Length: 194
Image (cartoon, rainbow, N blue to C red):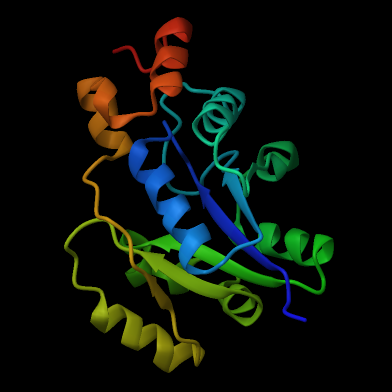
């Protein structure tokens, strides 16, 4: 009997956009996940909040992923409070699912800095890292370096590369970048107004 496969997709999601949703669907399908936890940071160690609360980001994720059967929006990092660290979330999910295989999705923009993450070796010892490519960045050298220092191969997600980004939305307020329900929520709440 195969192990249950649990995917972890964390991030700021400020706001969640169509690129996030498409990557999540590809992750579920290609790696035959039984569950995908979508986990917004409480306070990310690097990025800023733009005045949008964790609860609002959580609500937007619930709207964006409402129709994706295996996706579960998880508030563990928001409930935990303080800075959000992936190593702590991995430990928590390992306790919840001790017999499962954990797969962690990271964006290609984090590959060259992954070894700067808190307790990154604990992470690579306990998950299968999967990289989603969003742009046209050549990550072959950073991936090779990570393999040399961790002994772990980072797998690549074959996903459609969509140029949507949270930064682009915050700069343009382009509704085409977001799921319709998320855009309506933003408008109703008056979020991301300059």
